[in-house]
Image (tube, rainbow, N blue to C red; front, side, top):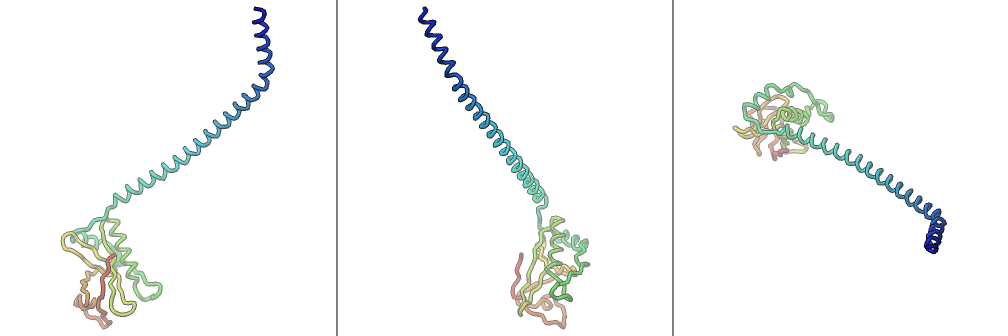
Length: 190
């Protein structure tokens, strides 16, 4: 029994002698664990912030999609189109081409008309009339009605236009003009 007590005292003494070195390594390991925990928490916080930012962007995109879906454009009936043309004020606008100050910028007027039609849910197209001769083109509006087919319009004067490849604008519309009347070569729908 005496031997057991001595053995126990020796084991305890050796353990106490080793303990200071052991505690410092445990303390060091504990400190490293705390640092790792802090790094993980920071990484998780950064990921959460990024996730929240991406979630917000996603919600904004969803909102924009809903807004766009709410404005689905449709082909109007002839009567709807006539009503819109009568109410629209594009024909009262004066937009002149910056390069040719005395010439209307028909493309701008057509774009304005189409933008206003789209705000009412009506689908329309920008039409380019390519005519014979250098730099000979006109911009008008084309709208496909549900009951009467295509309707072409000069938006600056609210006048319906008849188009026929191989004929000039004035000739196709039975109009007289002292201006040259180049033949329409191509009709391009945008």
